[in-house]
Length: 286
Image (cartoon, rainbow, N blue to C red; front, top):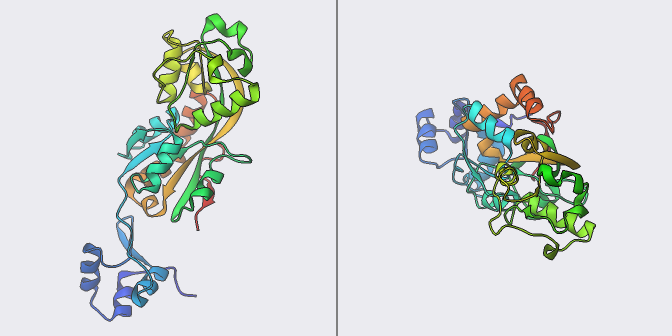
């Protein structure tokens, strides 16, 4: 069987040119290629389509940015791994939008679906050349100020309470709206500060500072701010990664760090995480 990837020499022989010419074409962005651990590889299917005039060159390189939903364990791992990836925590839906526009290499997602997390939202977008990698399962519930803890036992007890919300486009916002419907609540039943929180830590900090009595957050943040936590459900938190970006050094630094015992230990220390499926492929685009 033919190899899936060709070497520089094999491509030169196929095109009947010198290897130097192949390098020049790579530098000019004239030929499909990948760079893995400093070595050039050429996808045979793309090379064939390119020769026959049926294919297209690779899209522009995505910026080294992780966008989407905020997660304290991921935030920590991006720094500790030395990945040098920048972050833009703008919520799952907004992050997915940015990813679809080619503005980020990675999008962190926890979008609720009917039967699964994240995958239905991706399939609806018709994405190509992307892979969904499992990060963790997180425990999500109500983070409460101590003075109201005895009066708030489940979601319906938020009626009449001051609740800090998340921004539009956040996965937590979509989940909050679903839980409100199930509990028979409407926005008019809650007191909400005018400015929403944009990260998990911002939401918990607002409760700790007395700006709100409750928020829908993850267990790790309740522990960090020493607030009361009422677990409601477990959610999937995944990383959507561009296939080409997967082979870049920054993303590979994070991918390698995922498999370390240090990450598992940190997840245990933060609390509310199950990292058993970290690094597994959850979904592949066509």
